Image (cartoon, rainbow, N blue to C red; front, side):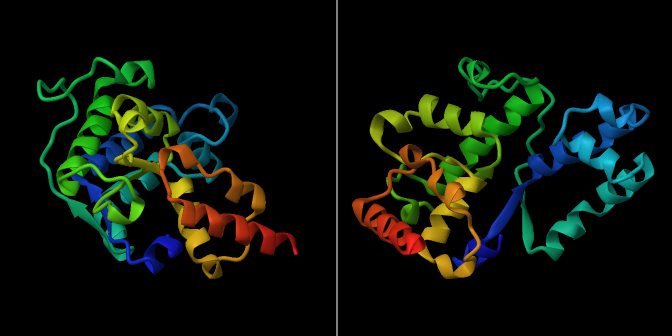
Length: 213
């Protein structure tokens, strides 16, 4: 977030994303009695269990979510959308090929894309021209948006971009923010989904040369 703030990004969370976060956290109480080995490594419930958090702790966190976000200068973007039922305004025909989720998760992802489209108001080809981005760690959603959203075909920028990719891109524009970014991390930029111009890649090459010296 340090890199993003330096580039004057404003942070928002959709109200339906907050709704989904509450639902996932509240569901922890149904799994709390399991042992740590029952959870896959690096999953949320594995992390909560290993930190020794109880359902009571989670209820306290859920109750403070909005204030915790505001303390981080993350504002809530109001939509008043409900996620629990199929929505006639959404097209579910393709997303299941990329992600195996329930209807609430599909609704969340599809509405996120639709709202970013609305905020942008037009398709763009460069990161600098995008008024809004939906950041995620879900690379399957990034792939769905890139392929099914037509961006691969017309050379436009995804509505959905991974946090890892965006942070790397911004680091290369201003590496002074964090000089500890490892080279193997930097090289794994998902270039094909960002359509950056030649000037960027020339800078990219020059910085790699400097890092080798």
